[in-house]
Image (cartoon, rainbow, N blue to C red; front, side):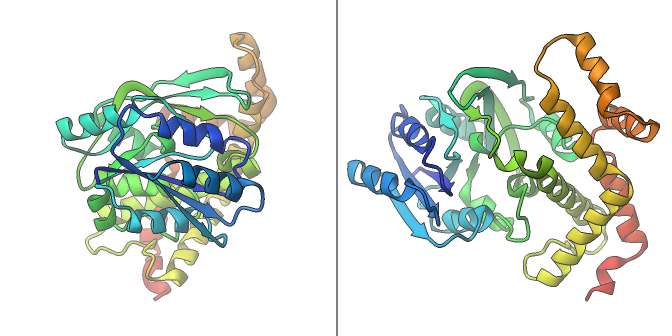
Length: 331
């Protein structure tokens, strides 16, 4: 089996039909479609059972809710394909996506390949698009700085290497994709195609939209600081090692508290509200709203540095972790 398309869904009745149809209508036909129903209480189960009868490529697993990370880890371990193509239940794959990414990955010897995306509304109308860099060096730079990167639903990666680097880590309740991409990038080449292969649906129930997107932000910093510890320490002692749950929890709480004390949590709330308030392309209005949401010197200074340097704070928190030798204090 060449490709496994991996989808985990929880209460996805609203848009899962569109997502499934977009995969079944791919120009590349040799794939397994592994769908994990993670304890849905809506009509998702019935929809999946109907599609399972229609197409033998679809394999459905119904389970009690264990969360996205654990479901993806489970799916990765039982997938039959050499390559994993991710898709979320609210997103849509363009018709040539699998064919183009499969050929591109083999041609470039990449272990991880993304593609460009467009963002659509709940009703399917085009909102905007964001350009993602193509080459390994720029992608690595963006990863390390938490800058613009391709969507999880556009990811196409080598199963064997993903398993070797530890798969999706259970310690990462959010930003599990970012954490995996960081580890994959340490083992092989990563790429992004110019091809627009996925439509990402924007809506208020997206994980990245809940609670100001703070969980995503906090866990992303955890993943990045974890990377710094792996690469800068003389001894490999990754605090997110999923074999030590106590250690991971301590580390995540440490990062959370540091972000809070340094006013980064407050900054992210302001940034979320600012972005949500922008409905116009009027530049003057956008600038004016900056001073509404960032209305004190400290938040303005953080915003300025964030715009210039992106994720500068992870390095500072890493240094404090190292200076206080906190790893050994919890073992």
